[in-house]
Length: 437
Picture 1 (cartoon, helix red, strand yellow):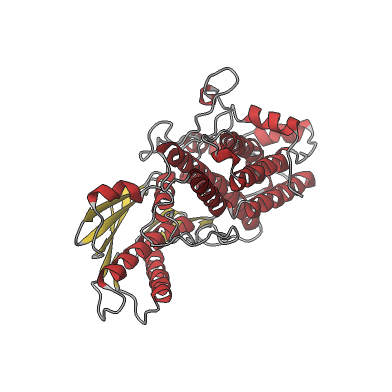
Picture 2 (cartoon, helix red, strand yellow):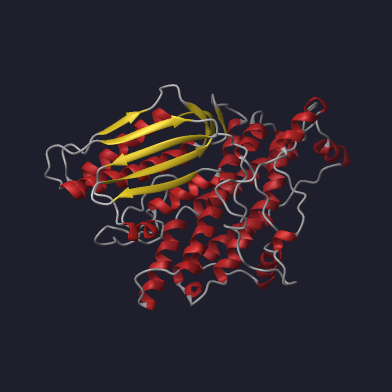
């Protein structure tokens, strides 16, 4: 029996959707989670119990208001129900009854950290995102954008940690983390299910490509999904790390991400997939130029996804241009450079390049150079950062969203008849805010 939300729930979702999301930077996440305690995790839970319903509500409303009948596609309705259920799960979770002394202590900053707290509350503008680029276009009941409303929510808050916390706080933290784990599992298949909905729409409307409105929606939707899963994954990991700390990790963020190691791993994975797909004994070689000690603060899962996707595309282009029977392929090169603002990764292949007129289509969802698009399995995308969308035209658009999420970018320059250079820019300053949805 399928889930159905009550009218009261849908009204509550509509109300929440009129409020703006609160952007968080990578640096804030790290500085907040360096010493996870019962008190700091409870403050984080309070923030997320307000922030996540707002982000989920934006998506529920937008999924319900999609144009041209797209909102009526079965797979789109299924995803809307998932988001509505997750909204209900968080908003219905009972909070602990705390006495006035504990409430006051939760709001009381640590004296020695007063200056630090001020620094952590600030984020910088994301240089890769235009104002409002990934913000949903819905309006509230007054006809004005929800973004105009002020928000007092702050991700970071230093707390007076002197003394013990009551067991009710620890119990709530555990219940909240368990709720988030269930939501994360529920949303595992969102990418492929939305893609299935787009396929249903294209078949019904007999269209080969999607228009710019749907393209913009998918950009907003998937950027929002990255943000929601980042906040959820980070909180779950911090809850786990309260009992067992992992060196150089704060949640899912690594403070010393080794770029060379991740690039080497992506090379091995992409070559393996290439050999498996084409039935080859030896995939095209990849040369890596990178300092062995190059590291910076980032989310390794995001970087692995982007490297694997872009490299897989390059190797596929090389094999299909020169033919899988060729004994020796031209070498694909990865050059990684460290600047003051960015870590830049260039992937250069000799895979024949892309016609100039086709380059804009590369960033379009559901555009692919594969001859036949395989059927979508909703259970296929059960991992956050493994890229199962080969042949669906999702690899590059979503990789660009991952890059832009923390202030980087992904760009492509092609020389038709020769090959393509992909530039992956990663913002190493770590203070860029998420794109607000």
